Amino acid sequence: MRGVLINKEPTLVSTVLGLAAPSRFTRFLAVAGPGMVVMLADTDAGSIITAAQSGAQWGYRLLMLQLVLVPILFVVQELTVRLGIVSGKGHGELIGDHFGRGWAWVSVGTLVLACIGALLSELSGLAGVGLLFGVPAWITMTVVVGGLTLMAYTGSYLSVERIAIAIGAFELVFLLVAWKAQPQATAMMSGALSIPWREPKYLYLVAANIGAVIMPWMVFYQQSAVVEKKLTIDDLPAARWDTAFGAFITQVIMASVLVATAATLGKADTHAALDTVQQIAQAITPFLGEGTGKLLFGLGMTGSALVATIVVTLTAARSLGEVLGVKHSLEHAPREAPWFYGCYTVSLAAGGLLVASGVNLVSLSVGVQVMNALLLPIVLGFLYLLARRLPMPHRLSGGYAIVVALIIALTAGFGVYAGLAGVAE
Image 1 (tube, one colour):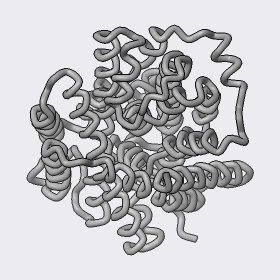
Image 2: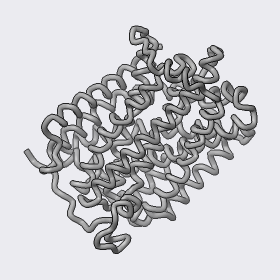
Image 3: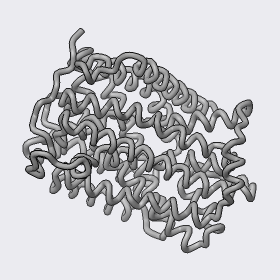
């Protein structure tokens, strides 16, 4: 069995800080970033809608699940960190090395389609936020596409990472939204411990929440990001903490959205439609105050959708570059990596034009859900197989390998169930 070669380039900490023996906290500050960015992107428009529906329909009965999903999210994404740091290669490139270019194209080709669909969903969410404040969609798209294009063309990986984290930090506004909804601690505790396992509609939302935890593009992005940031074996412990912290934060945000809707819509039993971000904002703002509620939800959704837009667009461009064998890094100038910047620009501009045109993208969102669901078993399957080929002591083995296999099977299975059940409805 062919193993994955170990990446032995100089560590990021020694290169950037020039320190022979940095403290653990110093190393963490230098290494942290890829995990935080991908986790903030995980709390995208679709995830927020799922959390809002959970709270509105079932109160606090799905709150405990949000905390249970933290270790599941960490286990899967830690494998991507391990693969990227140990091998020094992106996910698509590793698949090609071990399973052939055909399988690499299958995985990356479907991933790109899913990224394009996700991009349109995020841009639609941003357009919706603009409309809440009376800004036409074409102006919002012009600003977003222009700003993100300028960011990529003029910035390095580290500058893009810092911008993404700063933008994504606006998602923490949802914690304030939950607090202003004035949830009752006793109701939260009793509701979280009341689990109606026999209710099909409840199980569907359980599946939807689990399926929303791991997006296929998260695996590709984080592995490529740790490679582009030039992290090596010495940085692995700090990178794991980065991933763990990000997993906790993203699920706290999800729980906050659930609590906000449970404390307002769930208690009032309004049966409001919550299929879009705009509907969530319009339904919940009367309970928070029209101006305050709109502002808070607008800030949170802007941060969520923008960081997700950055991640899915970069993921598509990087993954295509990996299988094409061309330069695919933000560290290269546009003239040095024309395919990478070309894919990034074209997908972003085309998505902006389509959303600005006012085309109804509701049916597309269903297709994206199905695409993500069907792609998840493929992505997680390759992730597991590649981790089993790592050299010792980093190889996934023993009892932990069995636990990871069960988690992956559960996540992929529930993801497929949620996607197909959503289409059936």
